[in-house]
Image (cartoon, rainbow, N blue to C red):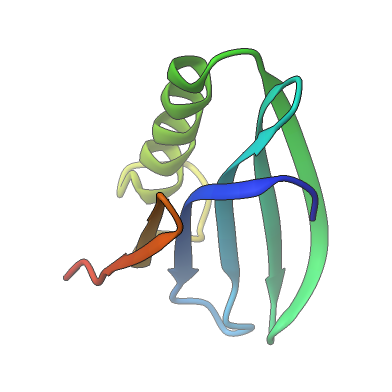
Length: 100
């Protein structure tokens, strides 16, 4: 992936194939990318990225995606939970494990 990772969240679903969803915000020269990788059984099956001009726009989109995926009332049979949430500030790695 291109750019410098600012934030990353790892979501996991209770599913027979062990589905996962990784979302990150990456700084690029033109602005920010919100990148998604999703898959199952440890394999990435889909990658997608959305461009945002400002960090505020990228963070808003990032948060909305997380809320949609972790909403217990979502229509999909896959209900995700946050496994790890990481921020990368001034080249210092911080990892927050969130209890679900």
